Image (cartoon, rainbow, N blue to C red; front, side):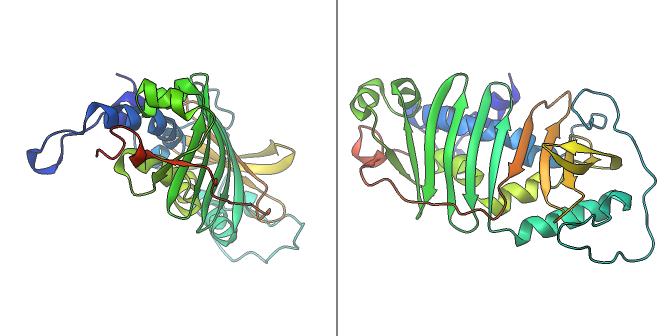
Length: 282
C-alpha cells in the first residue's frame, strides 16, 4: 500500500461506531488524496522516517556541509543586501525563514510530486485559490468564507459523488463546508500558516547547511534534515524559496510571489454537496 493510500484509508468511527459510507470514503480518497501527497513533501517532512539526510538537489547525495557560526549577533541587512544567514547555523537559518514567512501576508505555492501537481495562491487568514492535478485529473479549488469550492471534469467529480451527480455537475462548482471531515485535508492545505510551518521543518537532525547556490534565479542556502532540504533566500528577506524532497519522498514545492495581492471570491453558482444524493452523509 502506498503512503497516499495509507493516509487516505478511512478509519473506524471513534468508539467502534460504523464507518463512513462508501461515498464518503471515495470523496476522502479522491479529492483529499492530492492534499495528502503534498503533505508528504510539507507536513510529512517534519517526522522521522528513519532515513538518511536529503540532498540539496534531490539526487540522493549528501548535501555539502559548512561550519556553522554560533557566536555573536548579525547586523540587520539592507533590504536588498546579503543578510548573512549563509554563515549561520542550520537552526538560525530556519528561524530566520520562519520569521520571514510568518510576517508575509500571501504566497504562491507550486508543487510537482510526480502523480500530483499544484498551483495555489494563499492569503493568510482567508484561504486559497488555484488548481491541482492528480494522476492526470485536474480540478480547481477556492477555499474561502468557511467553504471549499471544487470544480473539475466528470472524472474528478465521480471520485467525489456518484456518476449521475458527476454528470449533472458538468462545469459547475461544488461547495463543501470547510469542516466536513471528508475534505479536512483540502481545507488544511489552504491554511497558509499551517503549510508554511510544516514546510520550514525539513525533518529531524542532524541538520546540515549546504553551499550557497542559485534557486529559481535567487541566491539561496539549503538546510537539509532527515526528509527534505529547504532553500532559503540569502538576499532580501530570508524567505523560503523551495522545499526539495528526499529519494524516499521525492518532489519539489516552490514558494514565490510573497506578499503579492490574492483575490479570493466564492463562486456564485456553486452547488451545495448536501443537495446531491448522499451528499450530506458523514
